[in-house]
Length: 251
Image (cartoon, rainbow, N blue to C red; front, side):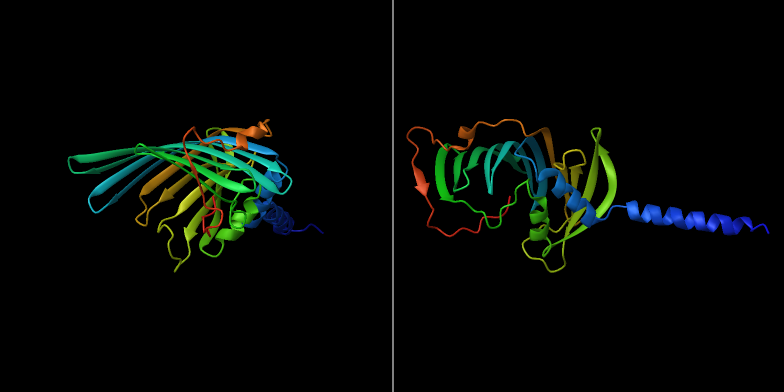
């Protein structure tokens, strides 16, 4: 007896469907893959460029940020050094104002230091290291879990960014969440390294407001330990805030 062709094709289609379903990525599987990629790294370094543009009450604000970031993992401690230069231009009609600043942030695992230079003034501070709600690139899963209460995440189709295959995660504030941007963000993670290579944010009307690009990514390249030793410029007094409670946001 010869079976009709339909009976031969249907089982093959079912097998194909099961195989496709089992290989399809989910948000949870991608988060686990990112965690597995970066958890074993000892050092992570990259450069960032950010451009933001917002308008409110007739004032157009455009901001630029250039940043060099270095992370070093020592056991359970994460040391970091972040050097930033920013420029902000506010324009209202024919009037405009420009502000420039630089910021050095260092964490040696025990204390957080900051050196801010803005409008001709220099300020240095020292705080107890904030290890409770700080995100580090060695533990993205922790960051995802910290955001779950206020941020709804969804996996979007993969995209190729500058020749890099990336996972794309959409992040939107949950209804009723306070003190969060009204729009959505798209975060692109390089499949090869697990590192965030681009983030873009939109306002509630769908207008692009912020673009951040991370480049020159280096994994496990040597970093001198003294890069994480804070040395204020001569004559600059460090304000000790170690006994002041802090609610610093996660980075």
